Image (tube, rainbow, N blue to C red; front, side, top):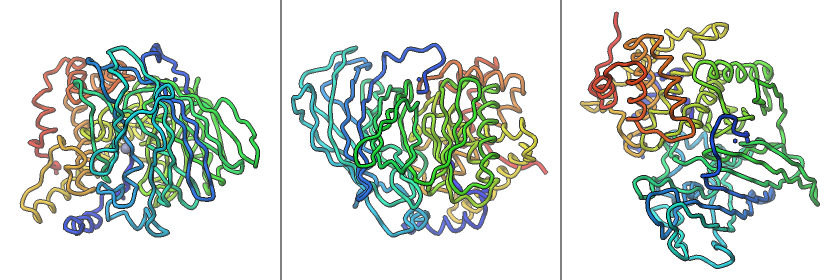
Length: 501
Ligand SMILES: [Zn+2]
């Protein structure tokens, strides 16, 4: 995600925020990888525009790739964060006004049936916000075996400018369907929603999705749209295939215009409304893809959709699809968010991580990769060194003010999203400090080894989930340097970051 507590991390916003402390593959997969050992999702969704609901039938062919037999399966129900009375709300009080311009509104997900081979299964909704679907299996699922689960449910969309919901210009379908919880060390990873950052963690899967909607809408999706069929009553049904992606998202709007350009085997599509500089916006997306293809390694999908939409933060990344907010302050910010979200296709999309537990891993590297974009595309007149200098100044300002008010400041990166006290605190650590860390790493090991390590990290971990130790190991090995204590001092919060005058 791109938080817009910038322009750029200003002190005024910081002080404002502190007052709130006590308030409240379709891409066909192009590189050598098998999509066969992944879960398969088949989703049929029908949008009812009159009441902003969706009727959905979902089939999951679930494969037990863990190291033990499973007696139950668990799925994340992210729409539950948007339900009335949710404890872990999708927006902080700081952003409520922006998120709900038409007043408070709630969404939900309601199940009618969960079954396997026609046999109804027992299921419960668990955790504080009933955000985990726990399905009892009819019999133990042995390692390496699969089961087909079918579910019928209804989604109610909230009127909110967020990942999931409808606004004045578009309907955002992000994190809308039950998605399997990752299993680590034989246990399901259960994490709450958080208004800080992106509280998501998932494995690669394959998707076949049918979305039926009134024909005056246009549809942007993850993956490749393979068929459009006219239905009765002026409805259109679009079929989408997406292989080897860690999530599936879609945006619908009646206002979309589309511009497209091919970059190698990838088609970049820009879905927009009200953009007088649409050609330049598409051009930035194309340049970002080309720059990162060369700098990091090839983007392995055939589609990349950059989608303007109503969204409370700057932007949001999904596989093959990114949201760009219609509410950015100026065109420079708009461009910056396009680059940031496209960089996430490498750091989140292809190389995944638990963004709830280690937000700094994808956000910090994405933010630094965005700064590198400007270094390699000088026509934007933004100097990478200035980006770093500004970040350093605002970081120091943040920690000083924080320290003055609270007596101390925790600068560790080892916290989960739920452990950061405020959104600004999370942003300064996961984005700003982590970006400074990667820039300092480049200084420590030198340009040549740094860029070699970036490529190595990407190639070694693509299509997987990584942990901090995987990242550290890659930079150590590729640079042939002992970097443990260097990383430890940055991540644990021991390092003192000061400007050199
Ligand atoms: Zn981000």
